[in-house]
Image (cartoon, one colour):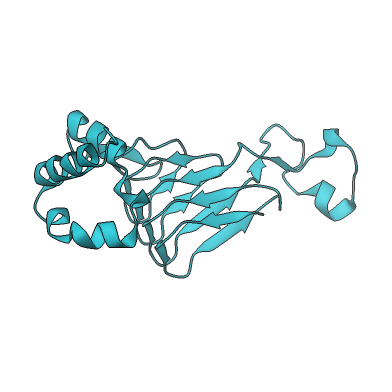
Length: 178
């Protein structure tokens, strides 16, 4: 199973639970995964099979008709995502940039950028910022900056989102990136 982990992403012991070695799990830059997080790659169960038991695996049945499980596609965790203690992310889910997943949550569906989700199944509790601020942050993409650029803007990361956006847009304008 290809697992791609971005720059400066930190993780306590995380369980990657593959069903298919070809299934992609991708985690963006500057994300944090707490102790006990589980991320699935494939392995969705067919609930309409006669047997719940994985007969193909243990009886070596062949052919597509005898699949024990299936995949919903790659599991993509964005940049600057925080997944808290013991949360579970099912296969085929996309968690948007800047999102937060609450402790012990089970993420069964895509999570929009900068949403805070919690529960089983995980539901949106609120958004971290206004719609306008989210659009600006997604345009700025600070997680793609060099380490030096991040250090230069250290004080603005802690000065509030509007100040950060203002300073970042001025930086981008000066560099001709707006």
